[in-house]
Amino acid sequence: MQLKNSISLLLGALVALGTSSCKNATKQTVNTKPNIIIIYADDLGYGDLSCYGATGVQTPNIDHLAKNGVRFTDAHSTASTCTPSRFSVLTGSYAFRNNAAILPGSAPLLIRPGTPTLPAMFQKNGYNTAVIGKWHLGLGDGTPTWNDQLRPGPLEIGFNYSFIVPATLDRVPTVFVENHQVVGLSTSDSLSISYDHKVGNLPTGLEHPEMTRMLADSQHSGTIIDSISRIGFMTGGKSAWWKDEDITATVVSKVKNYIHQNKQHPFFLYFAPTDVHVPRAPNARFKGASKMGPRGDAIAELDWSVGQVIDYLKKEGLADNTLIIFSSDNGPVLDDGYQDQAEALVGSDRPWGPFNGGKYSAFEAGTRMPTITYWPGHIQQTVSSTLFSHVDFYASLADLIGYKLNPGEAPDSYDMLPVIMGKSSKGRESMLEESYTLSLRAGNYKYIAPQTAAIPDWMKNKKIPTGLSKAPQLYDLSTDTAEHKNLAAIHPDIVQSMQQTITGIQQKATRPGYQNH
Image (cartoon, rainbow, N blue to C red):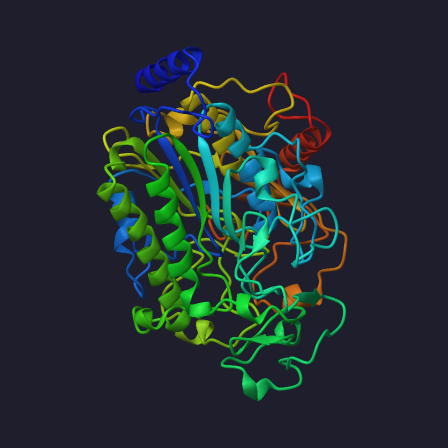
Protein backbone atom coordinates (compact mmCIF):
# COMPACT_ATOMS: atom_id res chain seq x y z
CA MET A 1 0.00 0.00 0.00
CA GLN A 2 2.93 2.35 0.77
CA LEU A 3 4.32 1.78 -2.75
CA LYS A 4 0.88 2.32 -4.30
CA ASN A 5 0.36 5.57 -2.41
CA SER A 6 3.81 6.84 -3.38
CA ILE A 7 3.22 6.13 -7.04
CA SER A 8 -0.27 7.66 -6.95
CA LEU A 9 1.00 10.82 -5.25
CA LEU A 10 3.88 11.18 -7.68
CA LEU A 11 1.75 10.65 -10.76
CA GLY A 12 -1.02 12.84 -9.42
CA ALA A 13 1.50 15.65 -8.97
CA LEU A 14 2.73 15.22 -12.52
CA VAL A 15 -0.81 15.39 -13.88
CA ALA A 16 -1.54 18.44 -11.73
CA LEU A 17 1.50 20.19 -13.21
CA GLY A 18 -0.15 19.84 -16.59
CA THR A 19 1.91 17.09 -18.17
CA SER A 20 0.97 17.29 -21.82
CA SER A 21 -0.03 14.25 -23.83
CA CYS A 22 2.66 12.65 -25.96
CA LYS A 23 0.66 13.47 -29.07
CA ASN A 24 0.84 17.23 -28.53
CA ALA A 25 4.10 17.61 -26.64
CA THR A 26 6.77 19.86 -28.16
CA LYS A 27 9.40 18.91 -25.60
CA GLN A 28 9.72 15.50 -24.04
CA THR A 29 11.51 14.69 -20.81
CA VAL A 30 12.49 11.29 -19.46
CA ASN A 31 9.47 9.09 -18.85
CA THR A 32 8.66 8.96 -15.13
CA LYS A 33 5.25 7.31 -15.40
CA PRO A 34 5.22 3.51 -15.60
CA ASN A 35 4.63 1.96 -18.99
CA ILE A 36 1.93 -0.71 -19.02
CA ILE A 37 1.90 -3.75 -21.32
CA ILE A 38 -0.94 -6.28 -21.23
CA ILE A 39 0.03 -9.43 -23.12
CA TYR A 40 -3.21 -11.29 -23.81
CA ALA A 41 -2.68 -14.70 -25.42
CA ASP A 42 -5.32 -16.65 -27.33
CA ASP A 43 -6.82 -19.97 -26.12
CA LEU A 44 -3.93 -20.61 -23.71
CA GLY A 45 -4.95 -22.95 -20.90
CA TYR A 46 -4.09 -22.87 -17.21
CA GLY A 47 -1.75 -25.84 -17.59
CA ASP A 48 -0.10 -24.83 -20.88
CA LEU A 49 3.02 -23.19 -19.41
CA SER A 50 5.93 -24.93 -17.72
CA CYS A 51 5.57 -22.56 -14.75
CA TYR A 52 2.03 -23.94 -14.37
CA GLY A 53 2.99 -27.59 -14.77
CA ALA A 54 3.40 -28.26 -18.49
CA THR A 55 6.08 -30.79 -19.38
CA GLY A 56 5.55 -31.30 -23.12
CA VAL A 57 6.69 -27.75 -23.83
CA GLN A 58 9.04 -25.40 -22.02
CA THR A 59 8.26 -21.68 -21.70
CA PRO A 60 11.41 -20.10 -20.20
CA ASN A 61 10.54 -16.49 -21.02
CA ILE A 62 7.09 -16.58 -19.46
CA ASP A 63 8.57 -18.60 -16.60
CA HIS A 64 10.98 -15.70 -16.07
CA LEU A 65 8.03 -13.39 -15.51
CA ALA A 66 6.53 -15.86 -13.04
CA LYS A 67 9.80 -16.37 -11.15
CA ASN A 68 10.20 -12.64 -10.68
CA GLY A 69 6.60 -11.51 -10.32
CA VAL A 70 3.21 -12.57 -9.04
CA ARG A 71 1.94 -15.89 -10.39
CA PHE A 72 -1.79 -16.19 -9.79
CA THR A 73 -3.50 -19.53 -9.23
CA ASP A 74 -7.10 -18.26 -9.07
CA ALA A 75 -7.23 -15.44 -11.64
CA HIS A 76 -9.93 -15.43 -14.30
CA SER A 77 -10.90 -14.01 -17.64
CA THR A 78 -14.50 -12.87 -17.45
CA ALA A 79 -15.70 -15.34 -20.09
CA SER A 80 -14.82 -18.68 -21.63
CA THR A 81 -14.75 -17.21 -25.14
CA CYS A 82 -12.61 -14.50 -26.67
CA THR A 83 -14.78 -11.56 -27.75
CA PRO A 84 -16.57 -11.27 -24.37
CA SER A 85 -13.38 -11.52 -22.32
CA ARG A 86 -11.54 -8.95 -24.47
CA PHE A 87 -14.53 -6.62 -24.27
CA SER A 88 -14.36 -6.80 -20.47
CA VAL A 89 -10.62 -6.07 -20.30
CA LEU A 90 -11.00 -2.93 -22.40
CA THR A 91 -14.21 -1.61 -20.82
CA GLY A 92 -14.18 -2.82 -17.20
CA SER A 93 -17.69 -4.15 -17.86
CA TYR A 94 -19.11 -7.65 -17.99
CA ALA A 95 -19.84 -8.62 -21.59
CA PHE A 96 -23.49 -9.53 -21.00
CA ARG A 97 -24.20 -5.82 -20.48
CA ASN A 98 -23.52 -5.35 -24.18
CA ASN A 99 -24.78 -8.75 -25.37
CA ALA A 100 -21.20 -9.44 -26.45
CA ALA A 101 -20.69 -12.83 -28.07
CA ILE A 102 -18.19 -14.37 -30.48
CA LEU A 103 -18.24 -12.07 -33.51
CA PRO A 104 -18.01 -12.99 -37.19
CA GLY A 105 -15.23 -11.34 -39.15
CA SER A 106 -17.69 -8.92 -40.74
CA ALA A 107 -19.17 -7.52 -37.51
CA PRO A 108 -19.37 -3.78 -36.75
CA LEU A 109 -17.35 -2.30 -33.92
CA LEU A 110 -18.68 -3.74 -30.66
CA ILE A 111 -17.34 -1.03 -28.33
CA ARG A 112 -19.04 2.11 -29.53
CA PRO A 113 -17.17 5.43 -29.65
CA GLY A 114 -17.82 7.40 -26.47
CA THR A 115 -17.77 4.29 -24.28
CA PRO A 116 -15.23 4.69 -21.46
CA THR A 117 -12.31 2.38 -22.25
CA LEU A 118 -8.99 1.43 -20.70
CA PRO A 119 -6.92 2.98 -23.52
CA ALA A 120 -8.99 6.17 -23.47
CA MET A 121 -8.41 6.41 -19.73
CA PHE A 122 -4.67 6.20 -20.31
CA GLN A 123 -4.88 8.78 -23.11
CA LYS A 124 -6.55 11.24 -20.76
CA ASN A 125 -3.64 10.79 -18.40
CA GLY A 126 -0.84 11.56 -20.84
CA TYR A 127 -0.21 8.11 -22.31
CA ASN A 128 0.25 7.02 -25.89
CA THR A 129 -1.75 3.84 -26.52
CA ALA A 130 -1.62 0.95 -28.98
CA VAL A 131 -3.23 -2.37 -29.79
CA ILE A 132 -1.12 -4.87 -31.72
CA GLY A 133 -2.30 -8.39 -32.57
CA LYS A 134 -5.70 -10.00 -32.38
CA TRP A 135 -8.72 -7.68 -32.25
CA HIS A 136 -12.01 -9.59 -32.78
CA LEU A 137 -14.15 -6.70 -31.55
CA GLY A 138 -15.52 -5.63 -34.91
CA LEU A 139 -14.84 -2.73 -37.28
CA GLY A 140 -17.00 -0.01 -38.79
CA ASP A 141 -20.66 0.83 -38.37
CA GLY A 142 -22.09 -1.97 -40.47
CA THR A 143 -20.41 -4.35 -42.86
CA PRO A 144 -16.72 -3.28 -42.94
CA THR A 145 -15.59 -1.50 -46.10
CA TRP A 146 -12.33 -3.38 -46.61
CA ASN A 147 -11.29 -1.35 -49.65
CA ASP A 148 -11.80 2.01 -47.97
CA GLN A 149 -11.28 3.58 -44.55
CA LEU A 150 -12.21 1.12 -41.77
CA ARG A 151 -13.76 3.31 -39.14
CA PRO A 152 -14.78 3.45 -36.41
CA GLY A 153 -12.20 1.07 -35.04
CA PRO A 154 -9.54 0.97 -32.32
CA LEU A 155 -8.51 4.58 -32.94
CA GLU A 156 -12.03 5.79 -32.21
CA ILE A 157 -12.16 4.16 -28.77
CA GLY A 158 -8.87 5.31 -27.28
CA PHE A 159 -5.93 3.82 -29.18
CA ASN A 160 -3.38 6.09 -30.88
CA TYR A 161 -2.08 3.24 -33.03
CA SER A 162 -3.38 -0.15 -34.09
CA PHE A 163 -1.99 -3.05 -36.10
CA ILE A 164 -4.49 -5.87 -35.90
CA VAL A 165 -5.72 -9.20 -37.11
CA PRO A 166 -9.37 -8.12 -37.58
CA ALA A 167 -10.99 -11.26 -36.17
CA THR A 168 -9.30 -14.65 -35.75
CA LEU A 169 -6.80 -16.69 -37.73
CA ASP A 170 -9.49 -19.12 -38.85
CA ARG A 171 -11.82 -16.40 -40.19
CA VAL A 172 -11.72 -14.31 -43.32
CA PRO A 173 -10.40 -11.78 -44.13
CA THR A 174 -6.82 -13.03 -43.82
CA VAL A 175 -5.26 -9.56 -43.81
CA PHE A 176 -3.75 -7.09 -41.37
CA VAL A 177 -5.37 -3.74 -40.67
CA GLU A 178 -3.14 -0.83 -39.64
CA ASN A 179 -5.05 2.07 -38.17
CA HIS A 180 -7.88 2.52 -40.71
CA GLN A 181 -6.63 0.55 -43.70
CA VAL A 182 -5.89 -2.97 -44.88
CA VAL A 183 -2.12 -3.31 -45.13
CA GLY A 184 -0.75 -3.76 -48.63
CA LEU A 185 -4.11 -3.75 -50.40
CA SER A 186 -3.96 -2.91 -54.10
CA THR A 187 -6.55 -0.47 -55.41
CA SER A 188 -6.88 -2.62 -58.53
CA ASP A 189 -7.76 -5.80 -56.64
CA SER A 190 -10.78 -5.24 -54.39
CA LEU A 191 -11.23 -7.42 -51.33
CA SER A 192 -14.64 -8.98 -50.73
CA ILE A 193 -15.82 -11.38 -48.04
CA SER A 194 -19.05 -13.11 -47.08
CA TYR A 195 -20.16 -15.37 -44.27
CA ASP A 196 -23.37 -16.32 -46.06
CA HIS A 197 -22.33 -17.51 -49.50
CA LYS A 198 -19.29 -18.11 -51.67
CA VAL A 199 -17.81 -15.07 -53.38
CA GLY A 200 -15.31 -15.26 -56.22
CA ASN A 201 -13.63 -18.35 -57.62
CA LEU A 202 -11.04 -19.21 -55.00
CA PRO A 203 -11.15 -22.90 -53.98
CA THR A 204 -12.75 -23.90 -50.68
CA GLY A 205 -11.98 -26.69 -48.28
CA LEU A 206 -15.35 -28.28 -49.00
CA GLU A 207 -14.60 -28.41 -52.73
CA HIS A 208 -10.88 -29.23 -52.61
CA PRO A 209 -9.75 -30.65 -49.27
CA GLU A 210 -6.70 -32.09 -51.04
CA MET A 211 -5.42 -28.51 -51.46
CA THR A 212 -5.19 -27.91 -47.70
CA ARG A 213 -2.24 -28.67 -45.43
CA MET A 214 -4.62 -29.79 -42.66
CA LEU A 215 -8.13 -31.16 -42.98
CA ALA A 216 -10.90 -29.16 -41.34
CA ASP A 217 -14.51 -29.61 -40.29
CA SER A 218 -17.28 -28.16 -42.44
CA GLN A 219 -17.40 -24.90 -40.45
CA HIS A 220 -13.72 -24.24 -41.22
CA SER A 221 -13.87 -25.36 -44.85
CA GLY A 222 -14.51 -22.05 -46.58
CA THR A 223 -12.00 -20.23 -48.76
CA ILE A 224 -8.48 -21.66 -48.81
CA ILE A 225 -5.75 -19.08 -48.10
CA ASP A 226 -2.12 -20.13 -47.58
CA SER A 227 -3.17 -23.79 -47.94
CA ILE A 228 -5.57 -23.48 -44.98
CA SER A 229 -9.36 -23.32 -45.30
CA ARG A 230 -11.14 -20.74 -43.16
CA ILE A 231 -14.54 -19.81 -41.77
CA GLY A 232 -16.29 -17.74 -44.43
CA PHE A 233 -15.58 -16.86 -48.04
CA MET A 234 -13.20 -14.37 -49.55
CA THR A 235 -11.94 -13.13 -52.90
CA GLY A 236 -9.48 -10.49 -54.09
CA GLY A 237 -6.95 -8.48 -52.14
CA LYS A 238 -4.18 -11.01 -52.85
CA SER A 239 -1.35 -8.54 -52.21
CA ALA A 240 -2.61 -8.09 -48.65
CA TRP A 241 -2.94 -11.75 -47.63
CA TRP A 242 -0.87 -12.81 -44.67
CA LYS A 243 1.37 -15.86 -44.54
CA ASP A 244 0.43 -17.78 -41.42
CA GLU A 245 3.89 -18.76 -40.27
CA ASP A 246 5.04 -15.12 -40.41
CA ILE A 247 2.22 -13.62 -38.35
CA THR A 248 3.93 -13.79 -34.95
CA ALA A 249 7.18 -12.30 -36.23
CA THR A 250 5.25 -9.53 -37.97
CA VAL A 251 3.31 -8.45 -34.88
CA VAL A 252 6.43 -8.70 -32.69
CA SER A 253 8.23 -6.41 -35.11
CA LYS A 254 5.36 -3.92 -34.80
CA VAL A 255 5.57 -4.15 -31.00
CA LYS A 256 9.29 -3.32 -31.07
CA ASN A 257 8.74 -0.41 -33.45
CA TYR A 258 6.02 0.98 -31.23
CA ILE A 259 8.12 0.70 -28.07
CA HIS A 260 11.08 2.38 -29.78
CA GLN A 261 8.99 5.25 -31.08
CA ASN A 262 7.41 5.88 -27.67
CA LYS A 263 10.28 5.21 -25.30
CA GLN A 264 10.55 8.87 -24.28
CA HIS A 265 7.02 9.10 -22.92
CA PRO A 266 4.60 6.75 -21.13
CA PHE A 267 2.71 4.21 -23.17
CA PHE A 268 0.00 1.61 -22.75
CA LEU A 269 0.31 -1.39 -25.08
CA TYR A 270 -2.35 -4.04 -25.46
CA PHE A 271 -0.35 -6.80 -27.15
CA ALA A 272 -2.63 -9.65 -28.24
CA PRO A 273 -0.62 -12.56 -29.73
CA THR A 274 -2.55 -14.87 -32.04
CA ASP A 275 -0.96 -18.01 -30.61
CA VAL A 276 -2.29 -20.63 -29.74
CA HIS A 277 -5.57 -20.23 -31.65
CA VAL A 278 -6.32 -22.46 -34.64
CA PRO A 279 -5.17 -22.91 -37.33
CA ARG A 280 -1.88 -23.64 -35.62
CA ALA A 281 0.83 -22.97 -38.17
CA PRO A 282 3.84 -21.66 -36.25
CA ASN A 283 7.01 -20.62 -38.02
CA ALA A 284 9.22 -23.47 -39.22
CA ARG A 285 11.90 -22.48 -36.68
CA PHE A 286 9.59 -23.78 -33.94
CA LYS A 287 8.87 -27.14 -35.53
CA GLY A 288 9.73 -29.77 -32.93
CA ALA A 289 10.15 -27.16 -30.18
CA SER A 290 7.69 -29.20 -28.13
CA LYS A 291 6.63 -32.81 -27.80
CA MET A 292 3.03 -31.92 -28.67
CA GLY A 293 3.06 -31.13 -32.37
CA PRO A 294 1.78 -27.83 -33.84
CA ARG A 295 -0.15 -26.78 -30.74
CA GLY A 296 2.84 -27.22 -28.47
CA ASP A 297 5.11 -25.56 -31.02
CA ALA A 298 2.69 -22.60 -31.11
CA ILE A 299 3.06 -22.31 -27.31
CA ALA A 300 6.83 -22.22 -27.80
CA GLU A 301 6.35 -19.49 -30.41
CA LEU A 302 4.19 -17.53 -27.97
CA ASP A 303 6.93 -17.82 -25.36
CA TRP A 304 9.47 -16.56 -27.90
CA SER A 305 7.32 -13.51 -28.60
CA VAL A 306 7.15 -12.72 -24.88
CA GLY A 307 10.92 -13.09 -24.65
CA GLN A 308 11.34 -10.65 -27.53
CA VAL A 309 9.32 -8.05 -25.64
CA ILE A 310 11.28 -8.55 -22.42
CA ASP A 311 14.63 -8.32 -24.19
CA TYR A 312 13.64 -5.26 -26.19
CA LEU A 313 12.48 -3.42 -23.10
CA LYS A 314 15.91 -4.09 -21.58
CA LYS A 315 17.63 -2.91 -24.76
CA GLU A 316 15.70 0.36 -24.68
CA GLY A 317 16.33 0.83 -20.96
CA LEU A 318 12.63 0.53 -20.12
CA ALA A 319 12.46 -2.77 -18.21
CA ASP A 320 12.48 -1.24 -14.74
CA ASN A 321 9.75 1.24 -15.62
CA THR A 322 7.33 -1.17 -17.30
CA LEU A 323 4.59 -3.23 -15.69
CA ILE A 324 3.86 -6.38 -17.72
CA ILE A 325 0.62 -8.27 -17.21
CA PHE A 326 0.49 -11.64 -18.96
CA SER A 327 -2.61 -13.80 -19.36
CA SER A 328 -5.05 -15.35 -21.83
CA ASP A 329 -8.59 -14.68 -23.01
CA ASN A 330 -10.19 -18.07 -22.27
CA GLY A 331 -9.44 -21.71 -21.59
CA PRO A 332 -7.83 -24.27 -23.90
CA VAL A 333 -9.28 -26.33 -26.73
CA LEU A 334 -7.52 -29.17 -28.52
CA ASP A 335 -9.89 -30.03 -31.37
CA ASP A 336 -11.27 -26.72 -32.63
CA GLY A 337 -11.97 -27.54 -36.25
CA TYR A 338 -8.62 -28.62 -37.71
CA GLN A 339 -6.90 -31.98 -37.68
CA ASP A 340 -3.50 -31.00 -36.29
CA GLN A 341 -2.96 -33.95 -33.91
CA ALA A 342 -3.42 -31.79 -30.81
CA GLU A 343 -5.39 -34.52 -29.03
CA ALA A 344 -3.11 -37.35 -30.06
CA LEU A 345 0.10 -35.55 -29.09
CA VAL A 346 -0.92 -33.86 -25.83
CA GLY A 347 0.57 -36.76 -23.91
CA SER A 348 0.33 -36.57 -20.14
CA ASP A 349 -0.01 -32.78 -20.14
CA ARG A 350 -3.30 -31.26 -19.06
CA PRO A 351 -3.82 -27.89 -20.78
CA TRP A 352 -6.79 -27.30 -18.46
CA GLY A 353 -4.66 -28.02 -15.38
CA PRO A 354 -6.40 -29.77 -12.47
CA PHE A 355 -9.76 -28.31 -13.49
CA ASN A 356 -12.68 -29.38 -15.65
CA GLY A 357 -13.79 -27.87 -18.94
CA GLY A 358 -11.97 -25.47 -21.25
CA LYS A 359 -12.86 -22.98 -23.96
CA TYR A 360 -16.65 -22.49 -24.29
CA SER A 361 -17.27 -24.26 -20.96
CA ALA A 362 -18.99 -23.07 -17.79
CA PHE A 363 -16.63 -25.23 -15.75
CA GLU A 364 -13.62 -23.67 -14.08
CA ALA A 365 -11.03 -24.26 -16.83
CA GLY A 366 -13.09 -22.05 -19.14
CA THR A 367 -11.97 -18.90 -17.32
CA ARG A 368 -9.22 -19.83 -14.86
CA MET A 369 -6.19 -18.39 -16.59
CA PRO A 370 -2.44 -18.43 -16.17
CA THR A 371 -1.96 -14.84 -15.01
CA ILE A 372 1.32 -13.14 -14.12
CA THR A 373 2.25 -9.58 -13.15
CA TYR A 374 5.87 -8.46 -13.48
CA TRP A 375 7.62 -5.18 -12.71
CA PRO A 376 11.33 -5.31 -11.79
CA GLY A 377 12.10 -3.50 -8.57
CA HIS A 378 8.44 -3.05 -7.69
CA ILE A 379 6.93 -6.54 -7.60
CA GLN A 380 8.61 -9.34 -5.70
CA GLN A 381 8.18 -13.01 -6.55
CA THR A 382 5.15 -14.60 -4.99
CA VAL A 383 2.44 -17.12 -5.74
CA SER A 384 -1.02 -15.69 -5.09
CA SER A 385 -4.17 -17.74 -4.55
CA THR A 386 -6.26 -14.55 -4.41
CA LEU A 387 -9.55 -14.58 -6.32
CA PHE A 388 -9.05 -12.09 -9.14
CA SER A 389 -10.89 -11.14 -12.33
CA HIS A 390 -9.45 -9.57 -15.47
CA VAL A 391 -12.29 -7.07 -15.43
CA ASP A 392 -10.40 -5.51 -12.51
CA PHE A 393 -7.45 -4.46 -14.67
CA TYR A 394 -9.26 -1.20 -15.47
CA ALA A 395 -9.86 0.14 -11.96
CA SER A 396 -6.54 -1.20 -10.68
CA LEU A 397 -4.48 0.48 -13.39
CA ALA A 398 -6.48 3.68 -12.95
CA ASP A 399 -5.37 3.67 -9.31
CA LEU A 400 -1.78 3.02 -10.37
CA ILE A 401 -1.65 6.25 -12.38
CA GLY A 402 -3.68 8.26 -9.90
CA TYR A 403 -6.90 8.50 -11.89
CA LYS A 404 -10.31 8.50 -10.22
CA LEU A 405 -12.99 6.74 -12.22
CA ASN A 406 -16.08 8.68 -13.21
CA PRO A 407 -19.66 7.50 -12.57
CA GLY A 408 -20.57 5.02 -15.29
CA GLU A 409 -16.95 4.16 -16.04
CA ALA A 410 -15.85 0.51 -15.73
CA PRO A 411 -18.99 -0.48 -13.76
CA ASP A 412 -17.83 -4.00 -12.87
CA SER A 413 -14.17 -3.27 -12.18
CA TYR A 414 -12.73 -3.28 -8.66
CA ASP A 415 -9.46 -1.70 -7.57
CA MET A 416 -7.14 -4.67 -6.98
CA LEU A 417 -3.84 -2.80 -7.35
CA PRO A 418 -2.36 -4.18 -4.09
CA VAL A 419 -3.20 -7.69 -5.37
CA ILE A 420 -1.56 -7.02 -8.75
CA MET A 421 1.51 -5.67 -6.96
CA GLY A 422 1.69 -8.73 -4.71
CA LYS A 423 1.12 -6.60 -1.61
CA SER A 424 -2.24 -8.03 -0.57
CA SER A 425 -4.11 -11.32 -0.57
CA LYS A 426 -7.48 -9.63 -0.13
CA GLY A 427 -9.22 -10.34 -3.41
CA ARG A 428 -12.79 -10.54 -4.59
CA GLU A 429 -15.54 -11.94 -2.40
CA SER A 430 -17.51 -12.92 -5.48
CA MET A 431 -16.93 -12.94 -9.22
CA LEU A 432 -19.05 -13.55 -12.30
CA GLU A 433 -18.01 -16.04 -14.99
CA GLU A 434 -19.70 -15.91 -18.41
CA SER A 435 -20.16 -18.78 -20.86
CA TYR A 436 -23.42 -19.99 -22.41
CA THR A 437 -24.84 -19.36 -18.97
CA LEU A 438 -23.74 -17.29 -15.99
CA SER A 439 -21.72 -18.69 -13.11
CA LEU A 440 -20.60 -17.23 -9.81
CA ARG A 441 -17.58 -17.81 -7.65
CA ALA A 442 -17.93 -16.93 -3.97
CA GLY A 443 -15.01 -18.12 -1.90
CA ASN A 444 -14.51 -21.79 -2.68
CA TYR A 445 -18.06 -22.24 -3.94
CA LYS A 446 -18.85 -22.28 -7.64
CA TYR A 447 -22.47 -21.93 -8.77
CA ILE A 448 -23.56 -22.53 -12.38
CA ALA A 449 -27.00 -21.21 -13.25
CA PRO A 450 -29.37 -23.50 -15.19
CA GLN A 451 -29.17 -23.38 -18.98
CA THR A 452 -32.56 -23.92 -20.59
CA ALA A 453 -31.64 -23.54 -24.27
CA ALA A 454 -30.41 -26.56 -26.21
CA ILE A 455 -26.65 -27.05 -26.36
CA PRO A 456 -25.46 -26.32 -29.92
CA ASP A 457 -24.23 -29.36 -31.84
CA TRP A 458 -20.96 -27.63 -32.75
CA MET A 459 -20.22 -27.16 -29.07
CA LYS A 460 -20.74 -30.86 -28.39
CA ASN A 461 -18.21 -31.64 -31.10
CA LYS A 462 -15.44 -29.79 -29.25
CA LYS A 463 -15.08 -32.72 -26.82
CA ILE A 464 -15.03 -30.32 -23.88
CA PRO A 465 -17.40 -30.75 -20.91
CA THR A 466 -19.81 -27.85 -21.33
CA GLY A 467 -20.80 -27.45 -17.71
CA LEU A 468 -24.33 -26.73 -18.91
CA SER A 469 -27.37 -28.28 -17.28
CA LYS A 470 -31.07 -27.56 -16.90
CA ALA A 471 -30.58 -27.98 -13.16
CA PRO A 472 -28.63 -25.63 -10.88
CA GLN A 473 -25.11 -26.74 -10.01
CA LEU A 474 -23.04 -26.02 -6.92
CA TYR A 475 -19.49 -27.20 -6.32
CA ASP A 476 -17.04 -26.82 -3.44
CA LEU A 477 -13.72 -26.27 -5.21
CA SER A 478 -11.75 -26.78 -1.99
CA THR A 479 -12.63 -30.49 -2.08
CA ASP A 480 -13.86 -30.94 -5.65
CA THR A 481 -11.52 -29.13 -8.03
CA ALA A 482 -12.86 -31.04 -11.04
CA GLU A 483 -16.49 -30.07 -10.30
CA HIS A 484 -17.86 -33.61 -10.26
CA LYS A 485 -20.04 -33.55 -7.12
CA ASN A 486 -23.09 -31.29 -7.45
CA LEU A 487 -24.09 -30.02 -3.99
CA ALA A 488 -27.08 -27.96 -5.12
CA ALA A 489 -29.64 -30.31 -3.58
CA ILE A 490 -27.74 -30.38 -0.29
CA HIS A 491 -27.31 -26.61 0.01
CA PRO A 492 -30.40 -24.95 -1.51
CA ASP A 493 -29.81 -21.89 0.67
CA ILE A 494 -26.38 -21.30 -0.88
CA VAL A 495 -27.83 -21.83 -4.36
CA GLN A 496 -30.56 -19.29 -3.68
CA SER A 497 -28.11 -16.76 -2.28
CA MET A 498 -25.69 -17.08 -5.20
CA GLN A 499 -28.48 -16.84 -7.76
CA GLN A 500 -29.68 -13.68 -6.04
CA THR A 501 -26.15 -12.28 -6.32
CA ILE A 502 -26.12 -12.97 -10.07
CA THR A 503 -29.53 -11.33 -10.43
CA GLY A 504 -28.25 -8.31 -8.52
CA ILE A 505 -25.23 -8.02 -10.84
CA GLN A 506 -27.53 -8.23 -13.85
CA GLN A 507 -29.81 -5.51 -12.54
CA LYS A 508 -27.24 -2.95 -11.43
CA ALA A 509 -23.56 -2.11 -11.41
CA THR A 510 -21.55 -4.00 -8.82
CA ARG A 511 -19.30 -1.16 -7.71
CA PRO A 512 -21.13 1.17 -5.28
CA GLY A 513 -21.89 4.62 -6.68
CA TYR A 514 -21.54 3.61 -10.32
CA GLN A 515 -24.28 3.06 -12.86
CA ASN A 516 -24.34 0.84 -15.92
CA HIS A 517 -23.48 2.53 -19.18
